[in-house]
View: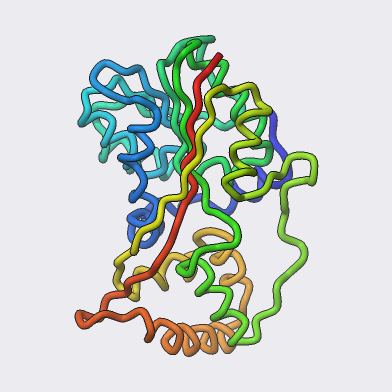
Amino acid sequence: MTTTAFDDHERLQWAGRATAYQDSLAALCAHPAGLLLDAAGVKAGTRLLDVGTGTGTVAALACSRAAQVTAIDAEPSMLMLARRQAPAADVCHAILPDLPFSDDFFDAAVANFVINHVGDPAATLVELQRVVRPGGRVAVTIWPYPPPPAQQLWAQIFDAADVGRPIALPRLTRDKDFSRTRDGLSELLHRTGLDNVGCDTITWIHRTDPEAWWNGPANGIGATGTLMQRQDSSTTERIRDQYEQHITAYRGPDGDLALPTAALLASASVT
């Protein structure tokens, strides 16, 4: 198994947190699912691999298109929810970048906000190409940098609450990292051997309950959650106070939040 310190951190960060993710940030990550499947050319009969399926949102949508779906994830609690959400899919445990499938087995592969959670993004893309037949499609989404307003909001809250940023969090090594821009993601796909690469920016307004937006980090979801859970109770109270102040500008008449956000969607052909 090929893993890095970053991979080990990610496994620990997501362990047992499927329900917390489903109740908080899953709806945010679900938004590009249809466009992702379109970019991969998924239709009736397509043999699709959905890597990092999470709670199974993309897999379920692909099944509704009558695709033949295999969905994998490294986190057992995610697999439990994915099997419920996508009962028609073959849902199994696997850890990127090592996939238990033969060469050219699938017509397409998709990774919805997954490349940003692996220690070697290039190796992951090479492995996706291995299991997809020549002429098949690979499509991925990632969060861009600089972050969109929805994600910037948390940095603003932490700054206002005077929360220090630890330097000990595992990061990708320089030789494995890439620019989280349209050009950077496109270049990553190109240099791993993919052809006919295209990359677009998707923008939308994420509408959510304020407690759901709080509960993701409060339950340890993502890098923001890792930082949140390292704080003592008094600091957490300061963060909550700043949270209430900062979300005021995004509250609608119904009390829900309307958060502008964006993602990068890249797709390409396997040679």
